[in-house]
Length: 164
Image (cartoon, rainbow, N blue to C red; front, side, top):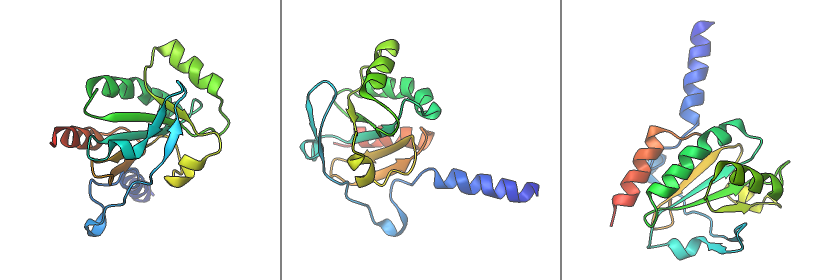
């Protein structure tokens, strides 16, 4: 019984993140989108192509892992200003703009946020749970998907922000 639990845990851990390049060296093109941030500005993914990598974080205020990772994400946003575009996307399920604004205000987060009220972005990116991070390179290719912030994600961000 212990062995099966260990195997299940290992499989779960492996399923929680995708490598920088997926099996067979095929890399998925990130679905294009334009969305309005809560501050009223427009985010257009296409505008970052050729300029800098983009990190999308799908999350919710009721997701405990999301809340645990938010301070680290905010620090990442501050650290890579100008080198990495970060966009948080609240999945909009059982949540509200009011909850998001309150959370950001109480914790001093300065991250850009989109509220996905109709779930279109969540669906477009095939998000099946929160948190989900999608790292997109300068060429508009998805380089990594992960459910949790890991050393592998940190290394991938560092690598992509160092490329010229």
